[in-house]
Image (cartoon, rainbow, N blue to C red; front, side):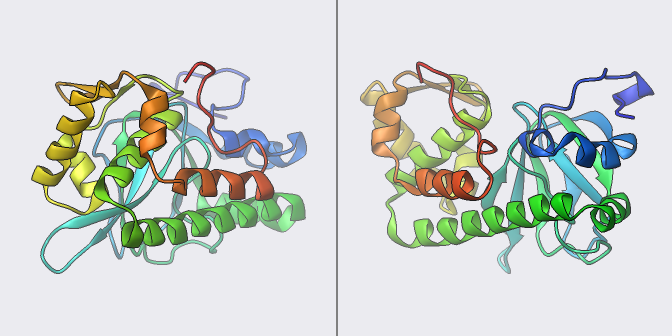
Length: 253
């Protein structure tokens, strides 16, 4: 049974996670008794490199998790964001393998958790459940490939716009995105000064405004024009492989 912190029942509706909502009723019933839910805060650690992967974490609603790759100079470089379209940890493995990256909560909010062992037991009972998670793993791999290509060929301006759009879509199209200049710099793998110059240029053009700890998008259409097409490429692959799972912005954005 799904529970919140303090073990208060959530109710009978499924969690607001598109991957879980993609499952058939019979497949969801196999894992539903083992799901728990709580609230996570920004920068909460889910896994460090080398940790045993024992829990699958499903971001719900506007929650976001981030994969970070540690480097020898002490910096972590973020590779992809995962929101309500997916999950992190033990997606296709049999679990208990060491985590390769650091996985942290980017935007706080509700997360649903499932022991890897329970997921594996359910997969043995259902080929359709196994197929959905295998398809999601394919989509995640495509997202990583696209991120690598994006970092190699697109400008800082394009990538800045891309990340803001990606975060905005995953926070239900909200115009206020809780990203700081420092967080954007980590996503881009550049110094904070580069990100600040890009944001200042966006502000001068009336595309965004900055607030303490967040960015307000004033002109979503102009922001999308400035972004590269990497988000669209990933979204198109999701639609081919797992239709309806990738987050879409609200109408009017």
